[in-house]
Image (cartoon, rainbow, N blue to C red):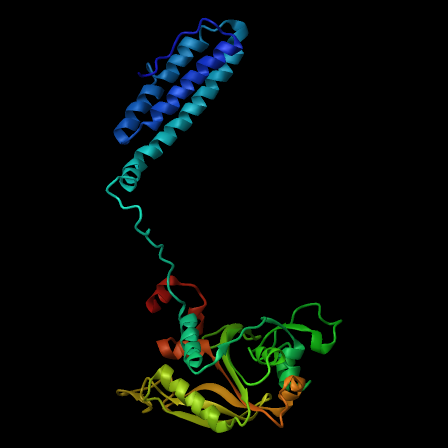
Length: 374
């Protein structure tokens, strides 16, 4: 039975409280029964119409005839009723909009044992995707994935990797140092790692040989951002240590990895270089997988390889015996073990793979650009 507002003859606090409670209970019950927009509009008019609406009748039948000494209490209660009914109206509007959906969801025709709809979570960033693909290549070769801190000490980032004290990389023009380190000893000063090589030392401190690890991660250098540089970028390094490892093992491993990643037709070339932590050292080139090593794309020059037919892809070499001296007590006696290490920039490989000519596009977060690689 629809609620009808009564006239008040008793204006005591108890009688007023009882009348208000009955009205609000009726309001809540009627709004809960809303099923569609038409129900909501009809009920809204019933309660809030300026003429003969229940809120209007509350004012006419309760407040206006109230004795002078009770008007303040009645007026306060009427305002509370109006506020609550207005909230019920908004709640009823929500029910009117959602009822068809809720009704369908809880209908007996729906099999509630079926799995729900999965929320789409996007796709891998092209640099992350490239990193994961390269890491999987080495995992298939038996390498384990290692990780370490991004904030490093001078000892792990430079000293234990055979960097001399006056090496340019230890200058603030190249490396981002943490502020307030002047009072510490040189080897204890904190910095943002400039390569993932410190993980090699940390791993050798924890694990005895033989080891084979691949190390992906972010690194930082004091470079202004431009089309080919960024103060933060990504590296993938690797380390293998065992007895009787030779430079031939290094060449065979990397040749296989590049063919696995870029395609079986890719050729590799090693050219002498220098790195403080490897001796001998080399830079590895792959034949341009875009122009097939010809240096031309049709009648136009091939830009990625600068018409040479070769692309520099990484640095590598045999681990310098001086590096093993820092972990000699954990089984890395340079007279008994040998190893090789390599490192490459994941961002550079992604640039080449996807034909992008500006490194900053990877870091600007424009989903229109990134969506192309999903």
